[in-house]
Image (cartoon, rainbow, N blue to C red; front, side):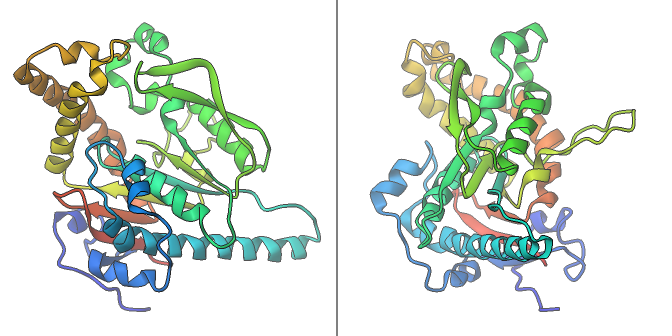
Length: 331
């Protein structure tokens, strides 16, 4: 077994991931060491494109793309290529014809940790490989139950928790994608109205790669009492990524983002959160901290963080929102 490259472990590596370095299922790398693995992978994004792709309050830069994302792109390229080779071998073995089903990448992590930025940047990088694969991105937001349903079931303060999603529809969607079906529809969510848009959808038509991003995509489900087979969302993933950070940092980013939205998107009268643009700064800070501690932190503890060890790749961010450490599952 190759010796893993490690950095000085902090509490992250000690909580369930590095109890014993030699027995850990992961290899650990500093960001500097990880950056070396990009080799000759070309940087195909411009400064302006990175500015457009990053989320509000996420300081990811062109240098961060070069430092972290190019190595990720090279790694994923190797996985996709290996998957294609295995498909061709199996096709010869079975003596059948057909096309390979899409390679699905799952991205999980807390609210405000930077999942959306990671997903969008990866989508652009992967689509610019020399083979020009077709890459699509879907988030789980569209699969949230409508606000009316959540209100009827007293789940509005559980929005983002597993029970607030239409899990059967998620599984139906992923099953159709993985079966290679064309013209598969996914619902659309509006962050302005904070609700699913009724009757609206986006069509996914046999991509080479699908990125599926959301809070709880790595979570397992409660098993039924009767002996029935129950699929998990992550059963459809070929590779999974978890975006991680220390809780105080995530809280800081969440509150900062809330306060910036209060000065921008919340000012739109159509915004679900328009009322927060009219209160004082002190009241807004108090509300942001309440929403974090009452909803998002609880969801992180109960449902999101426990799924971290299920990921193939973990990106650990520092206080500045930039990746400090990387953990890659051993093969």
